Image (cartoon, rainbow, N blue to C red; front, side):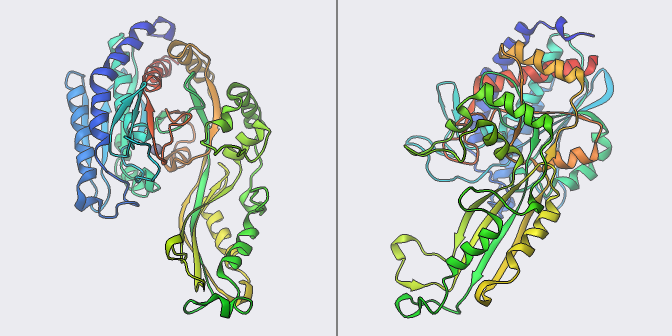
Length: 476
Ligand SMILES: [Zn+2]
């Protein structure tokens, strides 16, 4: 096949749809029941055995699905003391390589799930599969295998495909570089990377992720007293550790606007990305902010939609994700507490060097402690972001054709605010590769939060789109 227009896309879509209904969705239902939290959230993951259960479920499904497929292998690879990976190789009509990536570890439970829903309770409702990890990112392996088989069933050809499913992504993929080194020969030199772990602006078209933010962060602890004392006795004499913390955070963040002020954490935004943000804003309208569950009367950081998109995709932003040294409300007495600690998560521009940013952050927070307080920042993570290389003309054509054939709408491009650490690594290792980073994490799908769902029709459309992109890659 030399031309994707020769593909019967109606047959392709129905192959994919049937496979999802008959084999993928029922397995994802079982998968959601397994609490296989990423190692950062379950340090005893190995003893608990949930990760192994999830790996077995997926690997066994893959073996069955690929039984009749020529020259296909499924292997669970385990390096001592590390989370496992699933490596699937499917021979193609050329030795050129496509790497397809996803992960099977999950975020922790989080509170706030609606009645009848829960992280480990699969619920099918209104075309959505609720539960932790279905959309982020359990569906990826199923989608990748099905895309390849759907293409084969239509007589289409593709390059050699390597599917890599890791189990450490939600912890920052710290095990993955060891596997990439270990499997370097088998992975080869991919000319196309397909990552099925990203977001989509809506459920109406195929979204290609053009950038991902990086991240750094850790624990900031402000200590002022050896032990807590009566606040009536001490306030006015002993400075509050909470106030010192606020003061220190203001070095980083303008508390009125949320702007991260030091130049060290900012980057200039390429004009092409600003233009894409403008088009994405037109396509999305108020959904840019309305997709978030604001309380009544609340509004976003800015009114300009393009600014909101750029804030979310290209600008550093701070989230305080945890706290220590402050008791719960029911046990809060009138006391001047000895210390206040917070966990900081600082998103970084796609092009920022996360290791350098982490060192800069530590220096910024620890210098000149107010009142001589003991201020300690423990760096916990540093993952650089990713900015897509210029898109090849064949790929631009292919994603648009794929979006039309599956969603019936043109494709759209936008940066994503989250991080996929592996993409940064791959971008460095394979600077000449093209990237298709897409996913099903659209409005309200709420990965990492309560009520996470997988939008099933989007899962099908993304799967069929990957098939079309693989055909175009081979024919390029
Ligand atoms: Zn993910």
